[in-house]
Length: 276
Ligand SMILES: [Zn+2]
Image (tube, rainbow, N blue to C red; front, side, top):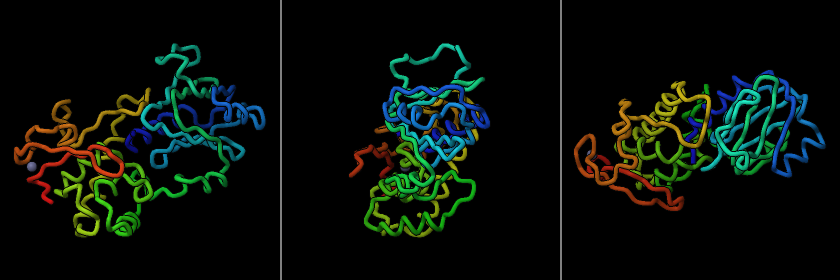
């Protein structure tokens, strides 16, 4: 699952490339999307903006039409000059938005739907999104309220719940808990307001630091470089994620890992720095 920063960067890249451009052709191998091109053509509409909301990517066309995509584990958006050779095989293509200057190509996106503003408001999972951790105006009070409304949830799971806060993924979940010295298996009810505030503030800090890094903006995939320790060295850029049995960077205790329910995503932590 991509982190919200990856989607934010994808949206920013697509926005810069596509905003105010006119669609010259639209292709899709997805029958439902093809149908929309026939019934209410996308061709000749203007692309108004591209934005991220949580882990969803929204492309707004003139005339109240919105393309909603989610990359899950496998999807990516690429941008190419017309006639430039694609870096993925055509068999993986799902959508192409052609403009005079740019072709935006979605490969293997598992969720792609057209909506009006109204149908988007009613779409399940989308309309339940919590505050976006990367929004320019953010509401920590609301995130804290949503966290505390789930007192029995383990914090490692709560941080992934897109209905509580939108945009955080599995890598940052473990990193944030380490920075705040919180054991990820503690329930929300056991956490102090100071600990909860630390988790939310650190989540924002990491994601924002990641989106201000402009490198690698041409091709956006579900992976992406992560950096939380402040070191750019590939071996030293994370505190605990995927460091099982390696020494803690604070206290040298071996890092532990195990799958956390119900998402079954692997959680990494230091048993000394993050006691239960
Ligand atoms: Zn430690």
